[in-house]
Structures are given as C-alpha cells and as structure tokens.
Image (cartoon, helix red, strand yellow):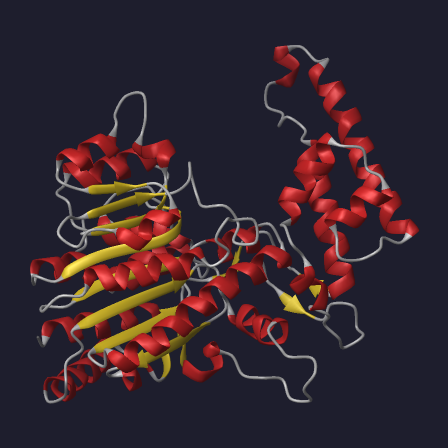
Length: 450
C-alpha cells in the first residue's frame, strides 16, 4: 500500500476511534515464530476425537486478518525476531538484529514508552529471558539483539520503563560484574523467583520476577505447564488502575520449538498460549475497555502437517507425551537404553527399526565425542564439540515426525504471512491484510486519542 493511502486510512481510523469508547488497556501478544501451521496444528492437537466435528479453538474464534513480516527492503524478505518486534513495537521497519533502532541505528520510540509517558502502567510477560529480542524491542534500544548484558543494564541505566517484568534471565541480571536484581530492589522493586509467589504480589510496588537462568523450561517440562497463563493472570490483576495499562505478552518458545523442529514442545507451548488467550477472552468480557491483539513476528521452521503423501496428520501421541524430546534425550544420554526405559519415557512402543536407529545415534555420537576429546586443543579449534544429547534429540524428533507425519523445511525463519487475532474494543480495526508496522500504528493511534 502506498504511504499516503496508508496514512489516510490510519487518520480515518483515528477519527472513528475518537468517537468511540477508547480502550483503556492494551494487551499486545506476540506468538514468536507462530505461523499459520501452528494454529492449525493446535486445532487438530486439541480436537476431541469422540466427536465427528473438529472443534474450533480460541484462535479460530478471534482470527481477524493476516500480516506481512518482511524487514527493511535492503535486508530481504525474511525477518528475525528483533526486526519483527521493532516493527510491532514502533511501526517502523529496520534491519535484522536491531532493537528499536532504525537503519541508521537511531532510537525509535516504542508503544510501551509512549504508554508510560501518558501515565499508564506498563508490563512485560515472556517465557524467554526478559532481555531477549522481543521484550527488549519494547523496553530498550540497541544496535544488536546479541548485546544481552547491555540490554539488561539499560533496563536500569536508561530509566525504568516497566512497572512489571516477568520471565527468565538470572544469568544476565545476577552477574559477577553487576547484580541488577539488587539494583531493582534498591529502586523499590518487589522481587520474586518462584511461580508460587505470583499469588501474592503487592500492588503498591513495581515487580520483577525471574524464574529461570535463561528462558523458562519448556511448558511440557515445567512445574507449571501453563506458566504464561499464570503470569498473565497475575500481571493483569496487578496492572489495573484508573489510567489503564499497556502489557506485552510473548509466547517466546513457540519459536524455539520451531528452530528445533520439535513438534512435541511446539504444541505444548501453543497450549500454554491458548490457555492464556482463553483467560483474556473472559477478562475482556468483564473489562470491556480492554483490547487484546495477538500476532506472530514471523513463522519458524517451515512447519507442515501431513508430510508423507498419505494425507494424514496424527497428533494423538503428542497429547500423550509427558516430557520434551530434549529432556528425554538428556535422560537417555546418561542411562542405558533399554526397552523398559523407552516404555517409561514414551507413550508408544518402539519398532525394531526405531530402536536400532536410536541406539545407533547414541553409539555414533559417543564414538565421535571420544575421537574429539582425543584431539589436541589445536585440532579441536574451529570444531564444535559433539553432543550425545543433541544426537539423541535429533533422532527422537525424527521418530516423532515420522509417526505424526510432521514436516519441516528449515531450522530458521520463513517469509510467509502470519495470522492476526483481536479481542475487545476496536478489534475490527485489525481486520484483513496489513503489514506488521500497521499493527503498531493502529495500537499507537488508540493510545493517541486518549
């Protein structure tokens, strides 16, 4: 769409908004890496097999449009999370790796920063570390998403912009050179490091909650399998006030599962996101001055359902899995791979070929590791240390892919359009096709009319 026409439509939208009930609360959700195959897959994963019809999910109930995700033109058509989040946070396209800076590396004001200046409360809830690309793009400005310590430091050094921060990140916030947790406490923050503490957070202090060294455990492995939902419930209750709030929520690890081509973990992360959206669906009914917008920054992995020409996809075993392939691989790397052990770890019986493939992957990886360790330090230089756990992990997800007929085209991102979902006040503003920058501009326009 031409820039002049886009500006005109946004101006018309602003006039319409100005004569309607303004949303006091804006909740932006990013399903990192969540392309359309993930929400489709979740529908089949969540289906009740005792009924003839495939039941709709909360995603189906609130789908309103699609969004393009490309970064600034000179950098191609496939975005990374940093450029994607910058577009969603500021309404401006930039280069891959940029944290809310433009192509000249100049800071771009984010919607969270604008909300704070308008006197609203602000919060961030993620399942990654809180200084990862997406939350960082709402809270900070940096030329590279990889500058994790710099970004963490900026949360204090550049002025505290969030009243509530929940996610992972001990590694970056409790360091030998600097203890940012102590500094947040000194600034008056209430600190928590267990999910149980979410039930009793004080409303008269800003909140910092860190629950893991880096990102949180996979949802399927976590002590709370719906931890994003639990954090969101605590956050919305905490943030409620007369002037309203802006809350960023990120289902960060949908993307991580996509990078690993791990359909088991992906569906567990999608289930956590679905439970979060179901809570917000009800929340909006009792808080009609709230708008919730969910989209993805990009799609990851090139996920496809039905990859063996049999026109079938079999998610049943995914619902029966009780731990992630990564956790299973760690167990099998340390213990003997007996049939009894596999029976304890998997909800299905291994075929002879599957068992042989798993044993071979462990044996080959152990041999490769032994050979690597026998090398001199000079010979090892430039080579990655072999991992028995990783070899087993790849073998396990391959077996699960074959059994479910799940396919992947890449371990990276793809350039396809992503779905957009909206609930509550002015949800119709997000109908149809739009660019990711349009989503930010529309949400900022909702702030601007207040």
